[in-house]
Length: 453
Image (cartoon, rainbow, N blue to C red; front, side, top):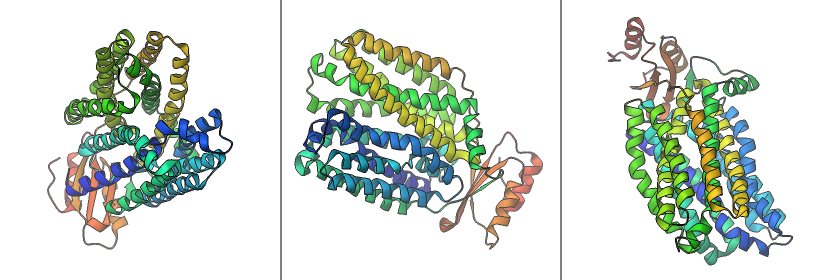
């Protein structure tokens, strides 16, 4: 990565991590701490925890549709402001209904897809998977850290203080956006009407298979985190307060295996093969836990397989999505994908609770393995994504930037031009399979330099 890409990746990954940390710290403590609120019942406590994800699922698509028309940064700021406001409302509330309203408003800042779309704008195609891997790592670490420090933070500042921490994190996330350059996007194909654009995205078979994949991945992850804690206590002898020290080393080990897989997928264009291998690893991990749940090492080996595959998938899915989605509808496609992600988490939590109520652990893991096998059958139908290349150029000294980008987009094989005027840099995204010798010569003329593509 160049300096611009590294700085932008760090900033946008930090935004994701800060939001996730603020969201997840409440989960391990609210079932107990939430009982202090007026009107609290088990059902309302559960709603207070889950309403955030439901708001996210419904509002990802509207935010992402807007992000394909307008500048992405102001939308992210607006979403983070809602996130911070929701945390403040929950912190000031003394009734469970106020907390529910605050959590719903925080969830209304549904900008996950917009953040990923902005990351795809400011990174070259060849560096995309690395950037997404870094973002996936930050999400995973924040997830584990939240479960580890949530009880400690609550003990120090109370449950209302925990919500104030959420507000502070939302504010810090807005400040991180200052590190990301302003971007203007120019496409060969102009954006269509909102409904037409959404229909186009929903009508693409490979995109739908990727949506099913993110749904399955987060359904299985959430169900597993609901289902496994009692088994770690009973069969592995690990108390609940120490579970973070189980998940964190496994996550770090998984990253050691995940990064070479991601490089292999991108550099040697083996994304489909690595993707299917990761789903196979998830199936195997669940089968290991189904057969060895009553053994400490069986549980840990199954978890390790799952985490390795999970981190590979977290990096590959958004990268693959950004390659397969229509360039002018990239954010819309990511919004649909994020909606499926949050719906997967919602249904996964419900499924995990159902599996716990069955009191048949082996059968529970077998059900999860069966779901993963169905997912594997879906992934076999995926086609290899299209690979674009990026050319980094210095902006010409011209006041008519729109005319210059229009001339570039008229060259056969040029798919998109992303201009960062503050840095005097542009990324030109090229389909090497489409560009001809004539087009190459015309592009060299427009850029005033010889191109080896």
